Structures are given as C-alpha cells and as structure tokens.
Image 1 (cartoon, helix red, strand yellow):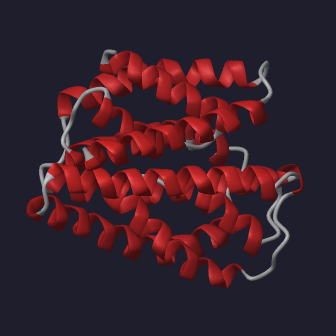
Image 2 (cartoon, helix red, strand yellow):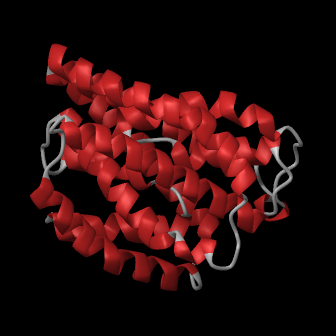
Length: 251
C-alpha cells in the first residue's frame, strides 16, 4: 500500500465519520510502512494538522466554531500536548520499539473504546450538548492533549464527548469547535516531533497528496452513505489495529 493511497483512505474515512485522523494514521504507518514509533506519531500528527487546516474553513466561514469554548479547551489541551509530546521524545530515546508498540497499542485501543462509548452514549448528537460547565473543559482536555501529543490519538472522540457533556453547543458547533481543537493540538504536537526529528518528510507529502483527494471523496460519500454504520466500522477497525500493535509489542 503506497503512502498516497494510504493518505486517500485515511482522509476519506475522516470525511465519512468526522473522527480518526491521528488515531488511524499512526497505527497504519507502524503496521503497513514499518516506521519507528516516534516517527510514525510525528508524521501522523503533521498529516492530521494539515488535513484539519484544509477542512477548518468549512466551519470557520459559516461561523460553526464557538471560540469561547475553544479557548477553554486549548487552555488545558496545549499544556497537555506539550507534556505528551516531550514524553514521547524522551521515551522513544530510552525504550526499545517493542515497548513503544505496547504503549501505542494500548492507547489506540482506548481511543477505539472511546469511539464505541460515544456511539452508545450519544445517540442524539444532532441535539447538541447537554451540560453547562464549559470552564471544566480545561481539566478534561489536559489529559486529552497529553494523549494526542504522545500517540496522535484521541482528540476527535474524546474532545467531542467533553464538549457534549459540558456545554450546550448545537451539533454543528460541536463538530466545528472540536476540529479546531484538534487542529491546535496537532500543530503544537507535530512541531515538537518535527523539532526532534521524528517525522518522515517524503512519506508525509505523499500522504497529503492522497489526503486532499480523500477529503473530497469522503465529503461526497458522506451525503450518500449513513455515517453511523461507518463510525461503528471505524471503531472496530481501530480496536483491531490497536490489538495488532499490542500483540506485535508482546511478540
């Protein structure tokens, strides 16, 4: 599987389901392209940041972003992603690849479980959030940011759950605000890994080349294919990828 086709598939999945950028990319780079753990995470974070940057105007222009809620999220998410990113740099220098596979595998499985929980618990996402304590978002997004910085996974599923539980945002603003949060932490997390040399520039730009067309394909298919079955399929696939990583770390 070439990086261009890989980028197309990942971006199409994002367009169909709205989640999964970093969560899908890092395991596939590890399992398909055989990248080292930290390099895969850094490349995945940078790819996710670029894709979300391309998608962001679709939510900014029609005013589907709540900047006050976004500010609370970034207040916790930015310190979290810095700590998680620096932790990955340190861990990757002192542990072998099998240990990193184990850690990343567990993280991806947890992200898949979060996606499955969201599908069970949030059956009426169209109604928007049900809480009214946005100031608590910083406390929740700190560990989310740390997870993103360490593994590139989690901002989509966990960020959406945090917004739905603590704000009264309508559905359109939930999605737009979470995408902007994912963009913010991905940019910072990718910067940390790029500075540390944990990325593959050649693979990255091939991913982006395929990702541009994948975004368009996903957006078109999203109007014709029910999103809920696709989200279930994605969650199960992510769990399988995480278990595969975990098993490879054991063996």
